[in-house]
Image 1 (cartoon, rainbow, N blue to C red):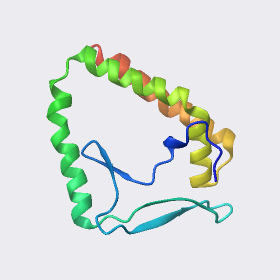
Image 2 (cartoon, one colour):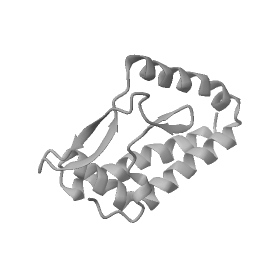
Image 3 (tube, one colour):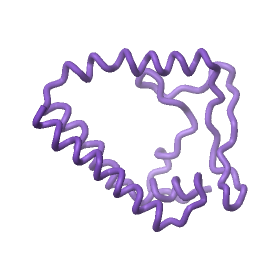
Image 4 (cartoon, rainbow, N blue to C red):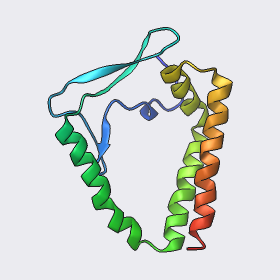
Length: 127
């Protein structure tokens, strides 16, 4: 098992409509570390209909996002960036376990990805 500072970061549910949900059937499939074959965790085995509901929930959330002011969008994106940076060590461990890549490479990818979120947070102010 991964030794995370915040074990809550490793999820075995799907975010649908603002809630973490299992498949209605309860079925899951394993996520395996490709370098060792060890099971990292499981994820719900959603049906086509459940995936469609997740896509629809995302589409339904867009008007709420669109209604936010530029400053509110910027603040939310900035908070996401801050959370990524705070959790970068755990996120890198999870990424390494899921993909089998070197930890240093995973850390670099977390910082790189966070930089895009930060950039969009700054650009959101100028909308």
